Image (cartoon, rainbow, N blue to C red; front, side, top):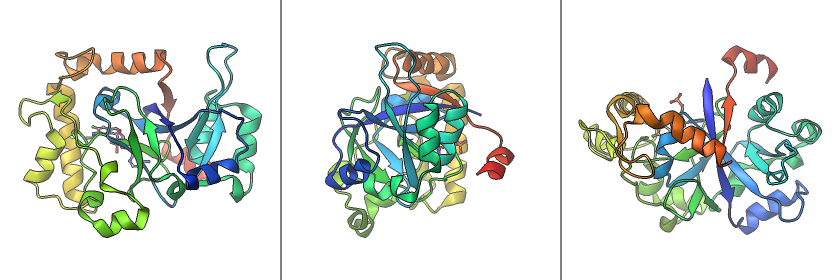
Length: 270
Ligand code: ZZB
C-alpha cells in the first residue's frame, strides 16, 4: 500500500506542546512536521484540520540529510511503528532515529499534548489548521496522524456536536473550520461526504457501519466521476490528476511517498 505523507508544519506550539517537545532536545529553530498518511493527495485542497489520537505516544524523528543544502534536516511526528518503516525506506536519519525508537518513555510525545496547536498544511486555503483529537485513529496504520478533509471524508462529527468533548480536550469552536467544496461529483455535488452523511443520518464517529458505506461510495465516485473544482488542476478529472498532484507535492517537498508493509510484517516486529 502506498501512502502520501503530507507534511503539516507545527506553526506555534501551545505551552503544553512546547514543554513536551523540549524532551527531544531539538536544535534551535528546528522545523517540526506532523506527517499525515493519505490515499487521496488530490483532496489536500480541502484540509480543515489535522487529527491525532490523544492516547498514542508519538515520536519526533529527524529526516535523513540528502546532502542537498536546500533540504535541511526536519523533524517528523509519527508513530514508532511508522518511524521504523520510514527508517528502512531511507526517509529518516539512521542513528538518531534508532535511538528514539529504542529510547525511554520520556522521549515520547503524547497526542494529547499537541491538541490545539496551529499548523500549516499544503494546498488548503486555510492559513492555519488545528491539531484535534480523533479516537478512531489506529496506531497500526499509516503514521497515526490523519489529515481531515470533511468535504470528502465522513469523520468529523463528535467535536462539533458535543461541548463536553471539546471541553475535555480544550478544543474551541474557532478551531473547527468549515468544509471546503473542492471536488464535484455529479451524483452527489461538491460536499459529497457531508451530503451522504446527512442522507444517512450519521450522528457520530461511532456509527461505524454507516460511515464505512459512505466512505466506500465517496472513494469510488470521487475517483471515477469526481472533477476538481479548485487549484491548478481545476476542471480535470480526479483519476487523471491524482498522480500529478502527488508528484507536485513531493517535488515541492511538501509530501513524502511512504510504503506500508503487509500486516503480518508489522505485527511480528511491532
Ligand atoms: C485524507 C483523506 C481525504 C482521506 C478523503 C480519505 C478521504 P483506508 O481508506 O481505510 O484504507 N487514515 C490514515 N491513517 C489512519 C489511521 N492510522 N487511522 C485511521 N484513519 C487513517 O485508509 C486511508 C484513509 O484513512 C486515509 O486517507 C486517511 O484519510 C485515513 F477525502 O486522508 B484519508 C472516502 C475517504 N476519503
